[in-house]
Image (cartoon, rainbow, N blue to C red; front, top):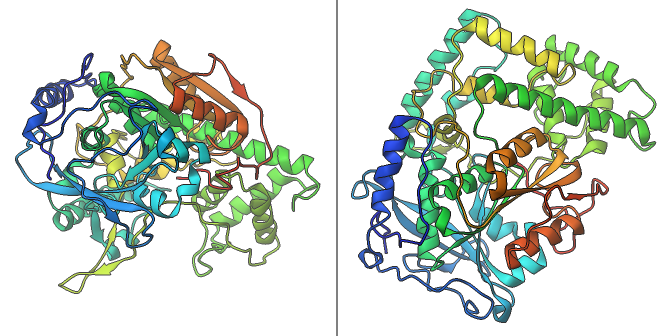
Length: 537
């Protein structure tokens, strides 16, 4: 059954909170009005608050017709029909793709745990169908695990563009005003192409819209309050859900936290500091570890030489030997290796590059569904472009090449080794995006009666500890930050200390003490029931 904007059951204490701009506040007020319509309009009956005894069987999932997933019949797949534009609930619709695995111990079932995938662009459906090992045995025993492909991603009416145009994306390393102008022109052509090929949803793939989708999922699952686990970019969805629907929060676990309060300079600077910190950890590990392929060598000096050679076009990409590495792509190659962290593999790769050998490609990070190019009826090839989500969530204006170059100079001072955070590509990809964006940055204003749990590594290479600590400050008493005193991205299951804290919170609503920390473990350690399955973006 399709879900309309008129069927969200009211909950005591529900007070939607808006963002910073008048346009956004008005939109939130309109959406809040939609949220007060009756449950009967869509046939979604409210249920009692979940407890081990009252929630011992799966909900009816009104509006979602579950059936065995084609890829693995032990999981269930379904769709939920939702408005493209929540301001126009009677307008065009799309199908949100979902997947579910029911609790392995129905007698101990607490309810449904909804997982928010990262990226932007990761597939929650794939996570449930083929990557369920991401979740500990205890969470699988106590919860139905449900996830989705966010609007504009994967199986949920993905944003698609000309594959040829996407392959021509300019380098984020701009040399002059002519490069800056060419990037603006390219971005404009890409937006026009993607909009024409994707349809109306192209302009409505922001995380704010997805927060309304998430509440529709909650209602369709028969859950009065949401139990949510978001990883990396999926934490932004959890943050915004808690803002908009504070009375509907049961538990929100945010893992590798995104700070959505930062303007261009702070966004770039915090990401530069994060990348450099992870490089410093790699150097320290190599210095102390005899098995490191670069042990006993000047790692920073070798790296500086590789960056210079990349600048001259002398290094081949390990994954695509016919393509030369640039200083930016070499830096990103290292930053992606820090996610695990995969320090040993990175050291071997850098050692091979230094001697002119052909290194084995680093293990590709888990990035969710990345569909190959497909041919359309007119013979042109299209490919997905999930990063369109980011450009509707962030306003990162840069006036001209002079301002861009100043950002590069400043970041080089913050990150003398890595120099170019992955955020640089995010900024240049969104240059010239229409303003105001649908979901602008703002400080969190969360007023839940259930505190959120934030978990972050001290040396996260993507969602830096600087982001997590700043979000914790914004939440105040509405959140608690649990620190993992190690490296890596997506670390809730990295050790028994981390996993048990997450389980106690999600199952029993027990929070760690303020300031709690879990000690570092070896870079390949993972808890039983979730071996080697940390989230990556």
